[in-house]
Image (cartoon, rainbow, N blue to C red):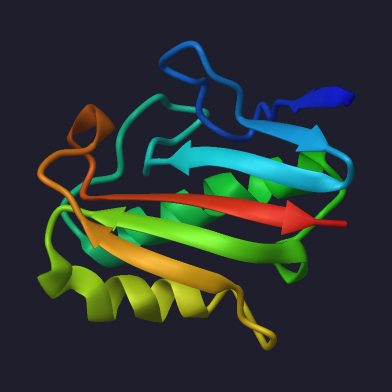
Length: 126
């Protein structure tokens, strides 16, 4: 098994011992992304739609580094601290897909890294 580490300068630097993504046999495993701006280092806060948009933009940057896009995504996991935000998260999330939506689960959690309100990870296949 050959693993290729995928890193994007347009996604925030990992805050721990993990990679943005790992590509194995045509499958890309993207680590959970939070709404941190890669260029300013600042967290996007205060509006769940803006936070979700930044998360999805970070994922997009990583997918592009692997020569993929959202049409390659087959599975997503959404973590949020308040399921009452689900409709707003879902609206923004859905705008990044046009058809053939990936499988997904959404889980409410007590806390996320950097006090984020939303984190999303994806699996994509070439």
